[in-house]
Image (cartoon, rainbow, N blue to C red; front, side, top):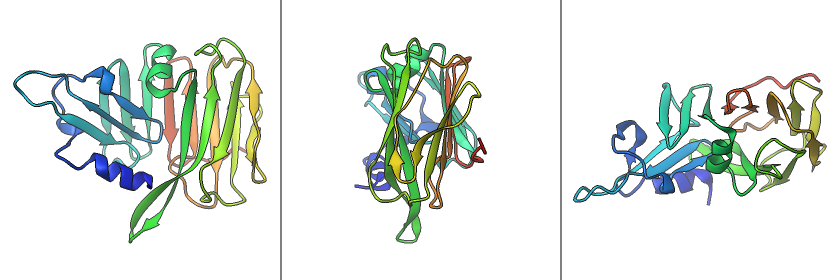
Length: 217
């Protein structure tokens, strides 16, 4: 099932958009996805029915900001971001075990409307759950959306670009713990949902930019 179809199912059944949310969140139900959406249920408050709140972040037409369970979620037409007081909170809320799984989503047309499909998976492995030891980034294709000219690269603390995807092959990238910033760039002749990810370790913020220039080096 495509990402668009999956998300459409989430919006059915009386779910209210996050803009109308007022009740506190049940943090056990919070789902934040680096592909650009969030959903959670309200805390039970008998006799009022529990509500489910959801928000697409990848196609916002106006600024959005909400703090849920220790994570500040923001976004606008240029992209979206997740920020927490501690890096560990981001790992717990956005991660899976001791890693961050990032989804590169392809953007196309389906029935005359925008369509979204998972194109690749990128995993930032954190051996201790934090940036305390060497970090490895790996990737894999999840379909045939990305063209042969697609390129992905990693840059750490303003250093040189290191290839993650080049000439049709994913290559593991290992580097010492970043102290300030980890950047991931995507370039493709077929459009993708975001072209730049930045993990700013100074403020514990992970941001995704829809359109970004690919660095020369």
